[in-house]
Image (cartoon, rainbow, N blue to C red; front, side, top):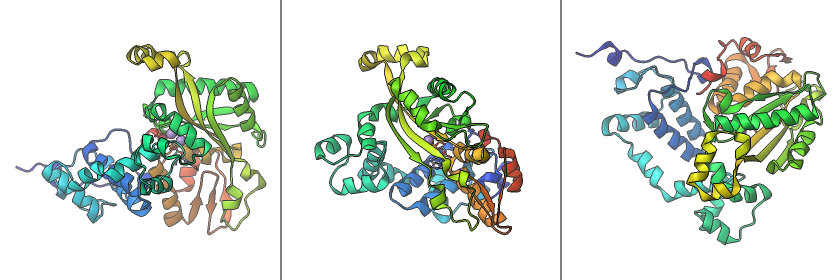
Length: 377
Ligand code: GTP
Ligand code: MN
Ligand code: MN
C-alpha cells in the first residue's frame, strides 16, 4: 500500500524569505547536486541559471522529509524543467550524469581552484584558463601580474581554503572586540554572516560595527585597522569607502549620513594561543609546518554602519545570499519597495521607511519574522 506521505505532494511558499530554512536538510544529495550546477553556472557568468538552481535547491532544503518520488514535487515553486531532470536522474539512477561530468570537467576544476584564491573572480580565472593556466603552480610559473589581494590570496591559499571553526570565529570576535573597545569604547560589534545563522564553520568571519550615536562611527574603521595592524594581526587589508550615494537610484536623495558605510576585507593572522583550543596542539602534532608557524590565516570582513542604518546592515550581512536576494525580490515585486543593506524605500509613497530592528523591517515588508538561524536558504 502507498502511504499518505508518498502521495501527498509537499507544499512550500514561493519566496525563500517566507520559509523557515534551518540547517537541517533531508535532501542533501539532491541539493548538493543542484548547488554544484549553480556554482558551475556562476563561475561561467551565467547568473540567471545560477539563481534558478539556487532557488530549486532552497525549495528542496525546506522540505520536511526526503523526496522519494517525483510525484511529491507536483506544484512546488522554483523547480524548472532542468532541475526536475536532475532530481529525476538522481532518484532513478542514484546520480545525475550532468552533475558527475561537470564535477570531473577540467574547466570546472580549474575554475574552482583559481577562484578559490582570494581576490580572483570568475572573469580573471576564465582569462587565465584561456591562457593555459589551470592550477596554482602554473599560475606561479606564468609570470602573470597579480594585484595585492591576489598575491596575499595565493600566499595563504592553503590556510584560507580550510573552513573557519566557530572557536576560531569566537577568538577573532574577542580580538576585534578588544580593538573596538580600545579605539571607540561605546561602539558595538556583532558577528554576522553564516555564524549568526548558527553555522559551525564558514569560509570567513563577518562583523558589523556601529556606534549608538549617529555620526560617531565616522573614522572608526581606520583607527580599528591601525590598532590591528600595529599588533601584527593583519596579513592583508583593504578598506573601501561605501559608494551608496553614487549607486543610489531612488528619486529621493538619501540623507547625507548615508555614504559613511565602510568595509574592510582582510586576512587575519590568528595564532594558536589566541584560539586556545585543544584542537590546535593536535594539528601541530599532525603537521610540522603548523608547529613552525603556530598561526593560521583567516578571511575576515569588517563593516561599519551608522546606527540609523544598522538594522538594514544587520539584515543584509546575515545572509544567506539567496535569502537576501529573495527578500529584495519580495520587496520589489510584492510590495513596490526597494530594500538594500542601507534602507527600505517605498516606491509608491516616494519615501524611506525607518526601522531600528530586523523585526520592524519584516513588519514593513508584510513578512512573518524569520530569525537568523532559519535564514539558511
Ligand atoms: P560563509 O562565509 O561561507 O559561512 O557564508 P556567509 O553566508 O557568511 O557568506 P559571506 O561571508 O560571503 O556573506 C555574508 C553576507 O554578507 C551575505 O548575506 C552576503 O549577501 C552579504 N554580503 C557579502 N558581500 C556583500 C557586499 O558587497 N555588500 C553587501 N551589502 N552585502 C554583502
Ligand atoms: Mn561569511
Ligand atoms: Mn564575508
